[in-house]
Length: 227
Image 1 (tube, rainbow, N blue to C red):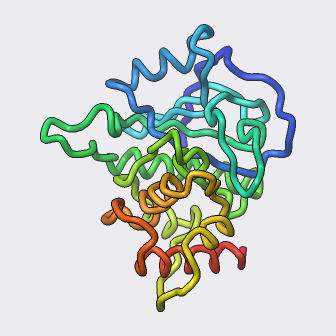
Image 2 (spheres, rainbow, N blue to C red):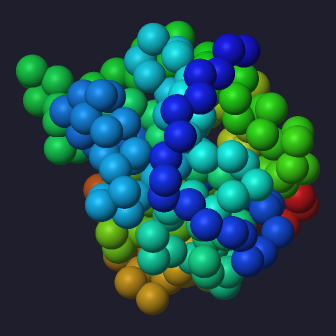
């Protein structure tokens, strides 16, 4: 795995132990525009890594430093997730820069394979548990939609990154209980439900606390409790 180093000035010291991996899409028109912003001192944002569509990996911040990618966010009651995580920005226009036909732009195979290789190395280095591999929308559901419902979370899970539990039956408890147990901030419950659907039910991102959502959320909560 080849990594090219390109330093960003936007980092400082961690305040907590590193135990999370956060995946993002860049959400900009081009990878070059995103990299320019992530290395611009005035912009005040950064990530540890950027993965281009070709699979090229750039490292902008050393892993032992606190990059500025998560913003206001929380997971399982933890805050200052910049101090707790490694952030990977994946070049993809996302919801703001769609494909010509209006669909969300693809994540090319070469790019996803690079994300898998990089993520596995980070997880192994820092012993990151599966329930702390998250998307930006998981940790900031009221603000963010990335890496989007088009991101192949199941493929990553099959490669050993995160979880993708099977659903064997229904569930009676309200989704809010399961979502809180998984780690979501449910203070804005509709936003948390949408974020959950983006990741775990990508073909059904619209809808509320219905029977299918309850079943999937309970399965994820059970899998997370076993980590």
